[in-house]
Length: 231
Image (cartoon, rainbow, N blue to C red; front, side, top):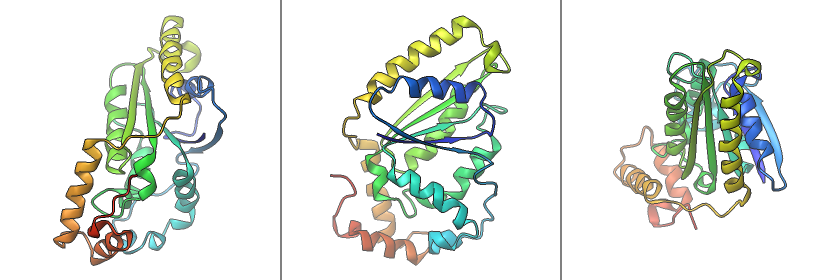
């Protein structure tokens, strides 16, 4: 299993450690690649819409492509972000903005329809599930049909001071999730993802995309002629 992890922070705090517990409980053979934000992508979207005409026209494409290539090859994506003010971290939000072309309404990748994703967030107090949920909403619009959200209140500012009782809960939860992911079963494209696809198809047929290049992209995939991005 190829796993790509994208962290919404540079440091290895409670959120990273929770994800690491999960990794240790995925028992199948695995290859792991990690990216840290903003270290590996330190830009904000300019709103120039060049990526709509072609992904490689983004002024930051050279840096984005390394992550983009890894994501396309991955079986499992793990996104982590601490809760900052009831939201994902600013670097994670900037990352999602820079990859908005992946959305179903624009130029979705066929490969995304067969992937799984996990989004993990921690908070000293409340808000972790909300922060993780906002990232998960983006990934569903990336056409990833199976997205698991895990948010936990750790009651500490760093992993060292997380109470043992909470660490035990995290271990138990990650054992359960890791066991499920270790089976690496074929991903089922559910009704929600299919409905989004059909809506996107209708939009492009009607010429309601952000650019004619989007309709050309959909036509090239064969999607406007009845082909489907899932098997």
